[in-house]
Image 1: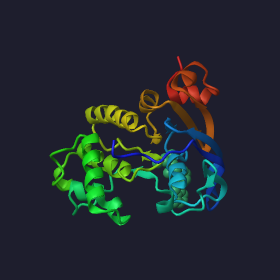
Image 2: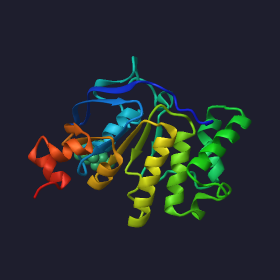
Image 3: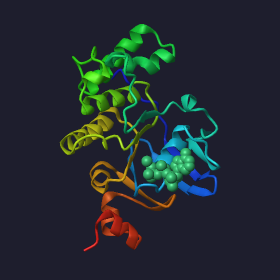
Length: 245
Ligand code: ADP
Ligand code: MG
């Protein structure tokens, strides 16, 4: 494959906190993500999922703690220095650029040679199954296709870590199921490491190798779908997961 993601052993959050004025949006969040894992950050609205992801991406400074990529401290780096791939709920595509230009934008900004950009964009297009659509503008695509462009754009820069914030919540139910499977397929084909934010228990249970349950800015439980199902650590986890009889 042409697209080769940067390799590392683990990403580690060490007692990360983030305050907004008097609000402690994150409180001492500690977490280790290993290479190749698909991690879901799960919890109700307002529990701190997006804040966690934005702190990892560097879009939001932490107010305490540290974030490590192996032995390098990254929470002091600018987002572009971290180079993580981001996929948002609202796609955030450039409306005036076609599919090919949207996907290649990050490589162009990095000053990569034209031939390399063409090669990598071709492979990303094929990975997300958008061949034949490359000259369309985002406005001419369906929601699912737009999200495929956003995914291609995130992975074409060969990030060590792919971060997704509720990427399917603007899609209808049928597309949501289809894209859920696509996201896991792409993760597997690339050998990516993915952190996926969702408030949807079904999504987390069906997609993730491990689920991190957040509540009020703190980690409530971390485990595989099976572990959460069989041994929820707290009543509220069981309740939120819908495991209550
Ligand atoms: P989630 O993504 O789980 O829905 P967020 O991480 O967006 O939750 O928000 C966590 C908490 O931090 C919420 O109480 C939210 O209102 C607050 N918050 C998030 N961003 C800001 C901000 N820029 N300024 C003030 N408060 C914020
Ligand atoms: Mg959010």
